[in-house]
Length: 491
Image (cartoon, rainbow, N blue to C red):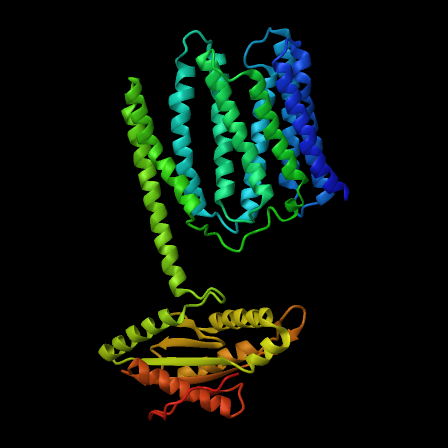
């Protein structure tokens, strides 16, 4: 067994023993310092475990993990200060431990933000909107059930109120970042879910601790709170020990997350939280903050509306965009051609059309594999887009065949464009996995005034057939008179 595998199995065992010992000591009359030993052991060992995971697995981007390590070092120091303060029993908030805890939150937030930016190719606005919906819902709950009771306690001095109120706010901030991390793009797997579980459990136990302090007599005991905190730390250490950290912050190819059932369920619960809180407050006979809840409902409604608009726009783009090359699809091109032909019928301007076929493409797939063929198609698409003039449309018509629509173009201009594109494609070889491959195209061109789409397409197609029959890697212009129907041969 490798040392990293041994550590990944040993750490949960050590954690389980410490948690069990802490719960057992909590049920006895053991002194406070003795009861704190298992908890402090986990708190002190966690940053060491994170550092071991970084050094063993050596992820390509380590800044986020080192920030996480630094955060856990500060957290362990703050825990030690807290134990000493509780043992002495004489402290005034904010204590030095509070300052250290606040620094921990800042370091942890910086680490998660770095993970989010590494994993997404852009700003990933849809995930940000989803996280904001959840944030508003969670913020409403925190205000109604934690922050408002804390700030309303007239017996607490102002500095104590501010200190105690800061923790729910900071916990909420970290929880929102955790939601943003999991709702964004990037690889899924144990590392992501362990980090999410760690930060979510920390949010839950801190909330339980705050509620216990407000209720003054909750059934949740300190030993169980410590057990939950220890479990949260243990999940964080397990995430760092997992080999998946090598690809955890690998940049995703897409910035659009799916509208999965789980995501929609989370958003539905978040949106329904505001009216749910209002109903619960009414049942309890508690005062209802109508302006606050109304504002939360309005903002979440607008965010969901924006999210739906984004999903509709994304679906429309997907319907008219070829997933391999990023060009327009045949469906979009057919519609654009029909529109341009109708416009030409009204105005009398010329319409040019190029049908382009990659020469001997079957040999590329057979000799180098389909991934190499995909690279060739992507590169040809890029060069055709770069060489086309503004106002035209480039689309993948099917397989290795492309089309270029050139409005307001006569035969001479169209042939100049065809030759420019042919030269653009054949000018440099294409890298297919370390090997340079010469790629050429054959082009059929047709230019008409007031054409119908079918006849224009047929004319360009027949010109392409002539170019391929003449030896390929050339452009042929269709004569003014229509030719016999025919399709280009394969390959």
